[in-house]
Length: 176
Image (cartoon, rainbow, N blue to C red; front, side):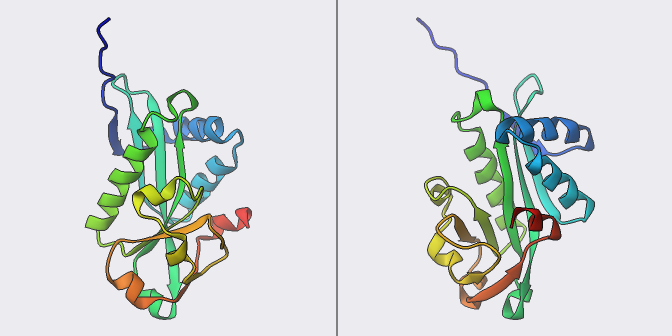
């Protein structure tokens, strides 16, 4: 039996025409519409700094990742800090590498744009593969804490400035 490779998905910036499909993807992936509302509100307040989608060769949306601006206080105000949230993959494509590809490519793009630190609240078993660390995040005073709160330094400036205090964009308050 000959196996045919699955075509690689295309990673690209989000277009306004993707918004409805992204909302449906988020609802399907999370089983609720809270994350779709979060993304809509982050867009509306101008907090989103990077959004990427993964589409299959037919153009069907497979995955989505977003990063929003986080504001630092004190020494952290000189840092470019963002939050990875949300990331979602169509349920029938989960565990296929789509999410990993999206996150890795987006982190590399953020690094090249001069981002210093990325924060995430998510499974401690998943995010360390990208370099996220709960120990580093413990040096960040934020509304979130614990092993699910993780940080990834993209520059030398971030760990040098720690400990720091940050505020997430207002729409995240719905998740407190």
